[in-house]
Amino acid sequence: MLWRALLACLAVLVFAGLYVKRLRRWFLISGSFGVLVALVLMVLPHVNPHVLLVLWPASIAGLADPSTVWDKIMVASFEFGGSFVLYGAGGTLVGLGFRGKPSQSNSTTR
Image (cartoon, rainbow, N blue to C red; front, side, top):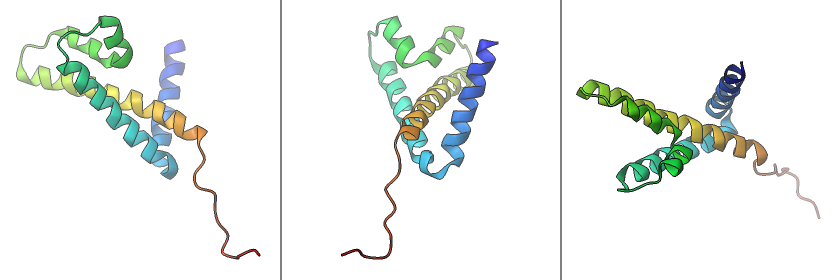
């Protein structure tokens, strides 16, 4: 039951990140950062497994040990897509805390 609530909250954050104009940039930049983190962790030769699972939780899908090229593509898309969505949702939360630029009125005050 707790997992359903967590997934529902994640879905709301992803929806807000994609369809609310002022949050879209937060979602896309944070999601891209998540993919960059995943790429860096993949390239590093020795990474502590605890650090790996904290910074790139979707990498646990790699334990499936894909054998064919198609399976490898599917696992990689799940891993990098999961990282994009999780970091993007976090960026949307951060974006909710910041307001946009204050609106300036057209009239000048003296």
